[in-house]
Length: 484
Picture 1: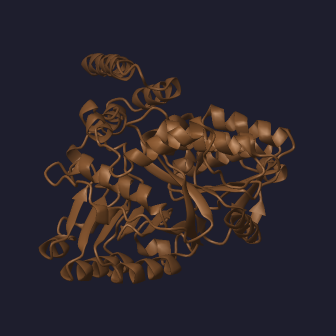
Picture 2: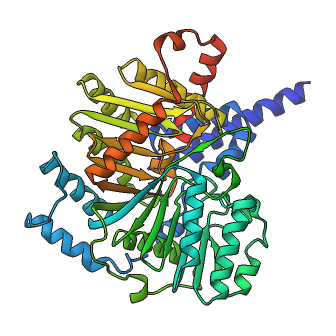
């Protein structure tokens, strides 16, 4: 017994020493994340350290270099031109009640993310999975030159096979098909899922990192983007991944309520750039160069002015989060947010509280069920804090809401892949579309109000009636929020 006791305490001592050395050696890590990882490693001796090796280590300098070194293909001249227009105050801004603050938001994205403002786009908001995939596949079938696809989750089920068959048919007809998938999100498709597409001349590659994800010590950094570009003229981006659950066919989750965009116009070109940059950072031996056919400039086809903004662990600017902060601080009347995961950092929490306490109508909508138990419990904890600060929190009760949207004053709207959580702001590669269009923004307000009809209000009485066990689970999960 004495030997066992000595071995046990020696193991604890070594585990603690390794925890301190490993976590603190990465000096740029957020303090809250450091304490969360120390908690994991000390509470789960040995096993916690293994979890940290796979999920906790920062992205490698080699990967950061590969991503940062990719030039903004096809967009450099436009970026520089818009910077000059802003400097001379000659940029033709969208019509909004915010005036100078609109310029500030446009400038924020241009300076921090080189996100140009494209004008006169036609944008359709899609909130149903069947409609989204029907439109997408119809557009794919009409492709003449190229189809570029990025999805975080790509499943080999009914809709996954249907989409793949459409891509294969296009490849067989001589259309250039490139698919970039996340090796963790698409882990269930199998090693040979894309073989037939490749035999037809198409390409399918994992975003940086081997498909052998058990050997990949950077599991925590996922490409959460969803982008489809067809002939450089039509783009899709938003919350939907590829799988039958996104059609509401999984009984456990019920109806899947998500929000996606179909874009026509020059707003597609920054999506094209984002795809090509990600492709070149991941596929070393098949680098793509600029082609005029990738960037067909079009005339105005609609009324929406927009900016495509991306963020990821390769950049400490966190442009999407800063955009959310700026939007909330700009609001004069209302802020409506939908997100499946609500784990904001201190800056966002305080900005939302200030808005609410200042008389701004702040509404938040979250799901009524978890797809990730720890994340959901932490979400409830933060949502309850919002209720205590005057925010109206609605629990969507007609299935599972996966939409990631924010709209202020019925004027400015963001739809994208980024949740209101620390993971989306700091760990995942994300892309959001920020739109300056009163008609579209008011449409999103109406969508939100319609969703309220199938939701219930989280009240102080409901919170008071939570069991002690439920409250414990929420607070315990919240301890790990910086790394969830």
